[in-house]
Image (cartoon, rainbow, N blue to C red; front, side):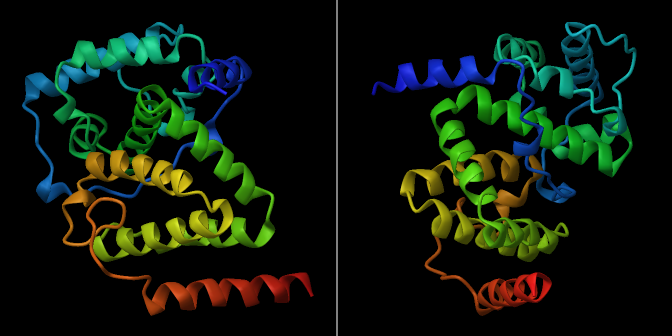
Length: 240
């Protein structure tokens, strides 16, 4: 079946669907390695986001925080979401400013900065990597159908505390679940494409070793294996 036909069917299905559950959360960025935009560039980014929100009848004069989930109405709009996101990028005219440091400066909040990175990263993945997004979506559906896999995948993110080592371990952990549950190499590549976008926006792609980003010969660590075994037996005890 041609890819274009599959994409068309999927995006028709996606109308009026909120993909919020597919938005990967992020931790605070690796601020020291990220590009710091000028005050005028920050202001331009802010105005571009305000223009985006106003297209959805959000009457805001400053960037709203994560507690109101202003991106929800955008995620529901599969018809115009990508057109509006591309307009946002054209307005900003500087992809380098779409990073954690920019949002931290604009919002003065780590939590809100993490939220904007997660939501913007999702739009980038959805709009510019459509075939990978579908594979990722199908893989996440498969994982959700298996209680153990879902539990382990959820526990993986608990490792992430905003250091090279923790982000690396989380990525190893999640990728291992994707490999086991979804089998397909394409699904692993789709997960990695999403992770590359997020680690680029947070600066963790600059770490010496980051799965999906650089191709080290390191195998899954004993820590990772321990975690999976630990969660497995914890899950069994809960059932019993």
